[in-house]
Length: 345
Image (cartoon, rainbow, N blue to C red):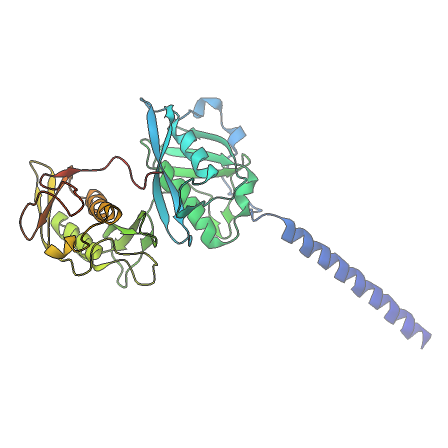
């Protein structure tokens, strides 16, 4: 019997030790950031790249503003914001620094953990820009927040010439994934900003600009369309989506007055002008400079986002007629060019 109690006591001690070891492993695991333990097989760290392969992205002329993609307050959509900067040719570096600093305007929030810093940014001989961040970037808390952060970086940088892909490094090292999101390869815009798939899959998409919940900023949403691919068909589909309002449960608002219809769309190839004929309800808001600016800019940005033709200007018609002014004084009797700023910070 004494042998049995000795064995039982030893077994109890072993179980206790195993429990302690398991608890320590769990604590250590929880304390680590969400980095991949296994880098890609062909991973190349930043310090391993010969200096001859790296080059700084310097534009041929200085810029004094950049488009930075922050997020709506509910963190469901990206929002492009025009930010003024000191004139510089190192626009890519400044753009990332502005993104990391976070917004200074209302109704948008940061997408990247607050303590994250830019360690380096450079190009190689391809159209891929390499962005090396501190490991604070790994403080992202979910797959959804990771996708939002990565998209904000990609869309901010691919606004610039020469850049079509973005490769993320953390502390000079290439990693495989963050919260299950593959970051081992260069990232691109793919289908478009804030893509929301339709009920039927499609190879054709358009980007439509709706209002964020406060009605102060425009939010681009990329949507599937079913068309033949003809430019005017694409334009008609885009503006039908605009006047019918944003996707249900998106939390976005329709910048165009309810009941507005598209009576016709045409394109003047010589003048590079898209002509859009609205029903009279488009001016039904009656007044308010903010409402008028939101309507006008939603039409302009939706038009200039269309692919398949070189649109330089947009002509508003109401019930088939040119009119001089909208209710708050916006002049629309001649074609309007693309605004040089969106959601100005």
